[in-house]
Image (cartoon, rainbow, N blue to C red; front, side):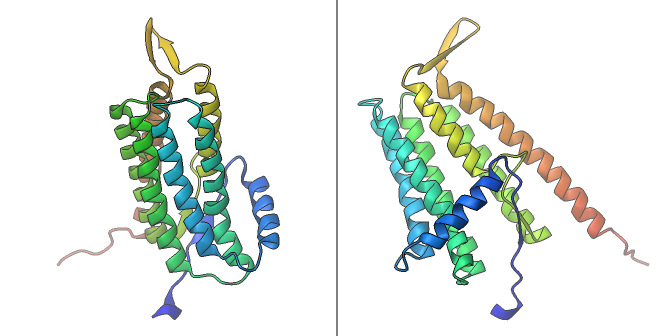
Length: 227
């Protein structure tokens, strides 16, 4: 059964993709022999958990935002490099890698957003909406990977790497401007940014779902009829 599995084509067209591919290949060539892809996957997961915990700890001091950014970097390092290292060493396990990578990403994303909800920078309602929109977009991606055979790593030139960069920049801004004023009312800065992100992700979900449905309809038209 394992010999019949066909790995999905990866599609990455984000802004930083060319530079990121070069950096990951450079790092993979220099990884110590004792480091393997499972170590990197676990590092990415623990870094996500650390980012969520650090967000929660900002209730005591905003300086914990620096720890969040350090964890975001470690998450990028582990989560992005694990697959590259496996390909470089010809140690690919496509089903195992796809499943474990995205299960840990799902759990890690949950912990990250829960940490944001505890922090003073995002309300619980916006955090919940952000989590739902992210999971909807993720589920759509995984279903499309199965149905179309293409794993889309980016939407509208944005990939997880761009999202990490935006979040890291936003964390630095929070140190000086934790709130934003709209129509004379003050809101937590990440309530504003999170609301924009929710709208953007829902728009990506709708556009992708419509595109995928039309593509699948053309691939499998309704040709049969009952006599």
